Image 1 (cartoon, one colour):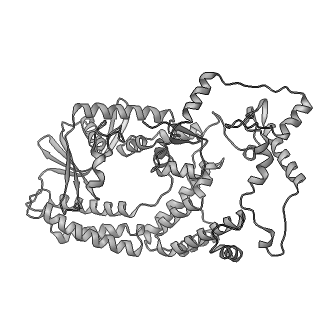
Image 2: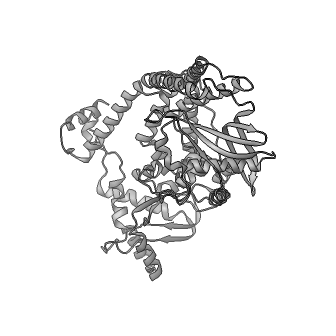
Image 3: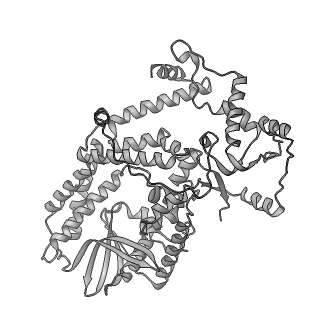
Length: 538
């Protein structure tokens, strides 16, 4: 670490790094310093989330041949962090490492749930990853000199200058040793084939510059006298490819995971509105969030929303059947209690900030919504809508509040945040080009109606209302009512069917390509995609 800091310090004040190695060392030093500082300021869950993203751990897993097992181990560790921080919300990184050291000293392992797939399908892997395996058909792609003859140079990763280590040990290979190591790797790749081996490379770049086959291809051709076979794409294929090159939206396409593994995940999958929204926004985001379930810390805003919802539930549960709602003090005490349960998601400053903000907002909201009002006499809070299916598609949902007038019901969903930032979420399809499938809140309301109609009850949904707990900039509280039309139901049912079919077909490895999509940005920034599909914007 001292050597790294020394090189990093030498780069301070320079407009450009002295060389590539020094630039990498400085980036590493900056990352380590930032992580060290953040370990004292961030909650442990958020620090760990930052570690796996900014240190490249998640990108490394996604590119690894053993990605399933590695992701299971990462999720297992993160689940353990969540359990420990739930018991001790203020746990530090040092304290957590001490727990791990203690477990290791006593030979205690974390429980790891592993899922296995099957042997059916196409295996995409690196030459290194193919060692020890055999296949009936092997396709070796990109057997070109500018890749293979440069492979050793470009894949040394993070080369360290000899002087950085005590004693100045230089382990650099000679050019001939480099070539022999690559030849052995090429041999490993081609000997994986039991019956048929296909070796290919393009004749030219997109700019028309000729490409030379790898020296190892020439050695095989000279020894075995194998003629070269040129494959020419037809005009229609060439035209289609050239069309794609004029697009402005680049959609990352990821490598597919074993079909058996994904089928195992989908066997228990039940469609809810969050999954539906995620898929329509970005199929790749759905894949990471709803299927693989990449570890992630709960945000401060989400934790705040949870505490507010729990406090609101108490108001309606204790007010039901009575002449008035509970007092404002009861309301605020419950909020404090619930926010404390979420303590592990906040640092000291943000916890105080959200405590003060929540007390202020809920005091005002109580006066506006509850003070002097008679509670609904018949109501349900936190009600599960499940055990139903739309044409054999299993559905489920969860409502904040249902109030009754006979068999007529009104569903209320409480929201925190600014309604002005949510206007587009209430749009129906076609009201704005940026929302061809309609807004998420509109879809959520219609999804509720579909669920209720499928229940074995005689309930009739009058409308769905979104009740914003926080006032807007003018100090006004807002409720957005959605009256659901037959056309709304047709639209959302069609979306459910289309998304369900695409999910069952594993059609979620291609992202949306939008600039503000965090998952597409992650895939492109870390270059973990197979290719980019370009799409012309309308």
